[in-house]
Length: 270
Image (cartoon, rainbow, N blue to C red):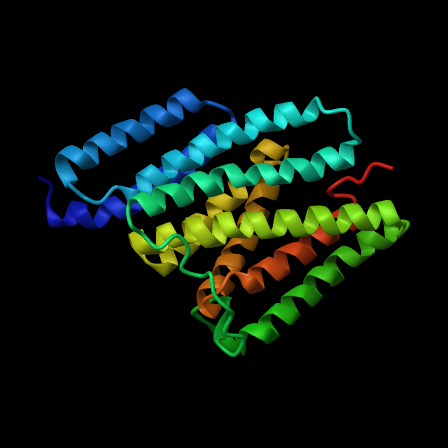
């Protein structure tokens, strides 16, 4: 058995392990990831005797990510336009979602705490979610955040001067909506729920945002850009926790994806 002090540390150890393994699987080092995970599960089983739903959820994520990569290779070989392949690849996010939902069901846990309508009148603070120099409603915060995002991306969009034809609009909407919904279900729905249950809201916000940002390494983004995504992940998690719903984060994520496409940071191939 371990001491009470170590029991308090264990949740944060698991969160830190989550981030480490997220980085490891981005480089497709699945043997190392599963070895670390197995060692942690055995340690908790022998010494801590804690409920191990979080580590099994992490195992489900790794397995889902492996299936994601395998499915992505299969999709790349399909005889369709690259834009269609990019949209199809977004559905592969369903693999970690399904596997992690299965683990939650097997352990009798609530799969997603935030699967409900948003409390738009709830207050959120800027810049530290719970503390800051100004409190504002979720609705007002979201409108300001979207306005800032649009203002930042507008010069890049004007420079690219995209032609708003039907193929672009179809890709814009299909990619943005599918990716936005599925990534939010995974990260602010399932992952955030597991972390909140393990270590509380503030730790969950920090580690889920960091994991979300670093998960983009495999898409070819640099580490500084991934840390930028992590900052976005902090605010996505914050607006989810404060509103009690993933819905505001879904809206924000979809609009952000649209801006990335219009500015050519996510490429649209004619």
